[in-house]
Each structure stands twice: as structure tokens, then as C-alpha cells.
Image 1 (cartoon, rainbow, N blue to C red):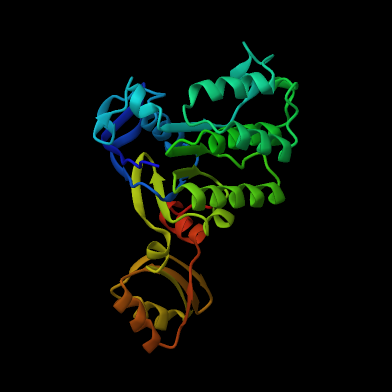
Image 2 (cartoon, rainbow, N blue to C red):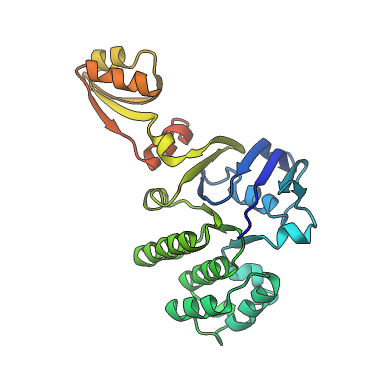
Length: 295
């Protein structure tokens, strides 16, 4: 499969006086699984809809293989944006049956895999004759996932695909995603609120905060920069000098700090009488985007 790079440069988007994206640059390299994480209102869905030419922008450009994606059939044939189906959005045509909805997807996506779609529909127990309006939240999520996987699109984007699924179904979704990725090498971008269980699937993580990209790097590389440092308050303070201290909690004379630093700086913590422990992706996300309040 041919792979292309999706790029955004200087993206700005406002709704009235509310600026949602601020001069945003982003490179999506081919053949990776990206996780897009951010708080509610950070601009994730807006960004994804502009990257896929489903929404307009106020400034900037989005290109695929160097060509503008806007009204570019050739570029858009390679991109699938499968977002959660809310029956309210389909109020005018929510009488559409599942099989008709999938048939329209088959027409829209030139690499559609009908056999794969049929297998997934059976596994997900989606009744072809059922109307979209009759589906449960979990079944709506399954339709979203089915379309994304069966589309065969070199760049496939899923916005909150697991929102309506229970933990067993979410595990199966990530398993299917990895199986498809291993077979095809497609580029996936998955936007999710359920960070920790998806962290091991993401090769790269994009952290979006208040319309700006804070991070876009390999997940392991990001996590290696963060540690919890705990111990007696004065020793923790001394040990953390020169590191970026993101937050500190205190209990009596004991302190626990979340810090960021380079490999050599973090290695130097071994010379102090403190406990040093790793931070997982959810911890890192809260430390970077919590802004001092609780999630």
C-alpha cells in the first residue's frame, strides 16, 4: 500500500470569538498508530475534521503528499474519518438500515473490503436490517469501528471509537486495530479519553491542549522524560533542582513531585535519598494538561 504524509501548517479555527485552534502545525508520518489525547474542548474533533476536509479553517493549510486536501478527491480517497454516530445527527435519515449505511460506505471508500466488513458485522452481531436509530450506544461504536477498519484507507482516523464499548469490547477493538496494522501498515489516528488502556497501542502520542499541540513524539520517548520523586520534603526539593517540576503534593514533611528532565538529569536522582518511580501516559497527560485542577 502506498503511504503518504498528512501535514498541517499554521491551522487556525474560530467559532465566533472562541479560537479553537491556534496556529497549529502537525506532521502525521505514514505507517504509525497515533493516539490523540486532550481534555474536553481542547479542539480534537475540530482538528480531525479539518485534517479530513470535513470542516473549514480560518487560516493555514492541510496537505496530503504535498497536495491540498480540500475538495481533492484523489487525496480524500486515501483518508477515512470514522466518527461516532449519534442518532440525533441522523434525525433526518435515521431510518437508514445498517446494511444501507454500510453499502454507502462501500461506495465512498475505493479500497473497501466487503468480506472484512461482513466478518466484522458478524463478530459484532450487527443486524443488517436494523435501523441506525435503533442501535445501542455500543452498537453505534461498532459501526464506527467497522467502517474505519473495512475502509482500507491508508490514513484512517477514529474519533472516540471506544466510547460506547465495555472493557471486553474495547480490548477486542485494540486487538483488531493491531492485527489490521500488522497486516497493512496503514496509518491510524485514534482520539480517546480512555488513555491508559490504549497507551500500549499508541506508537506516537499527540497531546492537544487548548488548541495547541504540546507533544507529538514516540510514546516511549515521551514517558522516559517523566518521573515521580518522593521522600522528605527538603531532600526532594534538593534532588529536583534543575528539573522541570510539574506538580508537588505535600503531606507533613513528605513530598511527592512529578518532574520532567533529560536522561542524565533523571539518572542523577539516584544520588539522593528519594524514591523515584515512572509515570504512565495518563499521569503525564494530567501533569501537562491539568493546569492545577483535578481531572
